Length: 459
Image (cartoon, rainbow, N blue to C red; front, side, top):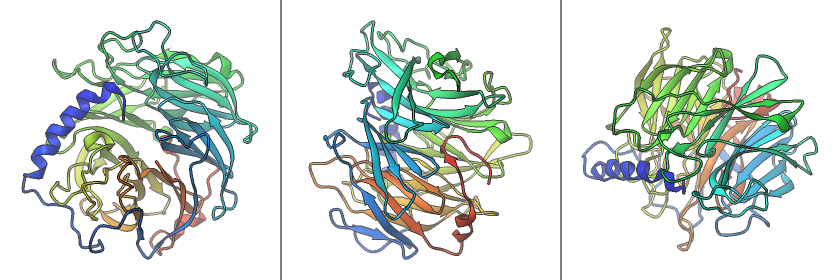
């Protein structure tokens, strides 16, 4: 989000944002919203959503740029990334969570996932070296490092740094992909680029990186493939290559990539040799293809657009409901994507609130398509896209604008895990929300032992 490589994408985003304000296209419907903008830090929520706990950011993550980022879950623990490292929370009692470990290991943005006794962090900025004591580095320096860090979390209260893997153009995000047997996992590493005159991100960077991790010997993790996804991209469109996020659905042998200017559909039957099935574009509405989510049946894909790169106020009445939004695509039996509808939160935000579609995942409601999602300062939204052409918000939680000296905040990620919604707020820490609604209550019976939002499992 703050990386120089995203400049080209942000410029394109700004160009799309500007005409939207005067386009005359329909704005988000305010029908479900209360009147007026909440006051500074004022909490508002729908009657079916309740904030039951908050764990504020604390030392060593109490600096001005120690922003909370993504989350992963395992057993009774929630793992929350931060630009300064990561926190392990005991959520065995969800309404009384407590931090049991805070690991200082700076490197934006520390996107996080877990698999068994291993934890993975994505670092997408050059560092002076691969250690947790590293400093911000010169991207042109020969020894600059960025990529994946691997930790042992067999003792949740004392995570132990094991290994680093340098990846081309770093690692903005990653997805865990199971191998052919339990002895191996793979990481699909997404990163923007290229960045000329750097040691690790030379043009053209039209690929992702695949890291192989032997579970019994994670110290030997290494890059085993760098498949190209955009070899046929027209000339002049190579300014931002790579992908932002890839979500995998191993049971369906599918992956969906949000790759800045494109959405891609992949066959991952062979996880080391993914095959490109289709590329889709939406130049009228989408600026930065940010993330993807399959429905449980594998017959739909929700792509999100991070118009403004997460820094802009795009949830304004003057901006179209199809910009900075989610797009719902049908996935046909022939494995092609067909766009069917859009969703954007119906609550207008102020010009002081960065707000756009961001990280979310399914709520496991049998027979329905329901998703929870973070919208930065737009808060947390629960929405139903069972009818893809007419999605509806059914619950929300949000705070009012931040103090004037703060310019970035709100829900980075929001996920449903074993009966509760967990939101990683950039400046406020971990929020725990309870959703009580007959449309979603069946999800409370679904229990998981692990959740990485970019690695989907059926329910």
